Length: 271
Image 1 (cartoon, one colour):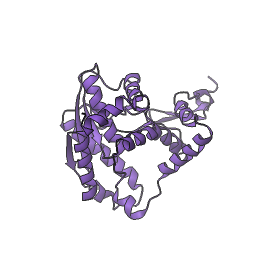
Image 2: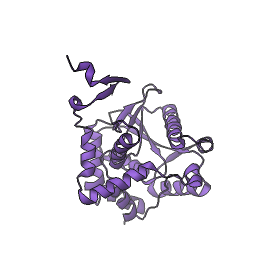
Image 3: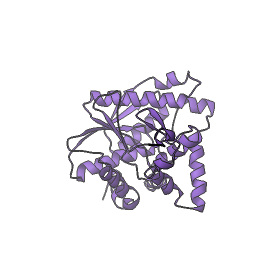
Image 4: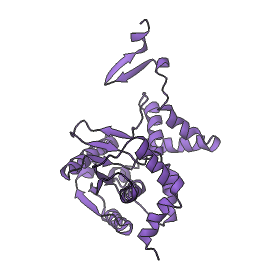
């Protein structure tokens, strides 16, 4: 008789093998996200994505050919007690040995009126890098998935006036020797939701004080609904948005940015 923890783990590599496990291992393999001897801090927010990532990383460590270390870190930015308790309970049910580090990020962000979500994300990222480095890690792993990637592309076009994606790995410019990886890069959000429901798991959402008190309308949620609307008519839309970042035809663009420098098509037009 399997324990609940064992049943949840088994579901990842059996029932959800095609939707979760294979896309997860494909991203790790294709983008060379993990190397021998890595020590990786899996950053857990308490949401469905990071909790699933933690279990996938654990399974890969147990059964994969590459040997690496993992630690599971949770930053408490000022969660309400019931939210914090839910994170601890889910970690217990899933058998994740988390290390919790408190911060006052929500209190700081709650005082901001301009781009609070952007500030929160930057502060959280910096905090996680710092704690991971203190623990001797050379990488942090985040739970961003396929839908995060394509939503980011559309957000950059519609609201940023630029074409920008979310890469599967990224070297830190502020923390020497540190790298960020996104192993769920190929996993669709719907598959994660189905996995959670199948295992009767309930996870937190943003839990941000600013969002709760000001009823902030998320632009990312707007992109999510837009993509869903398009995919109801053409199921390939999401995949095509993703592929667009692999097939950029530079010769047809009016300008590109390279290493922070803007280059106009006119700069090389007569050469």
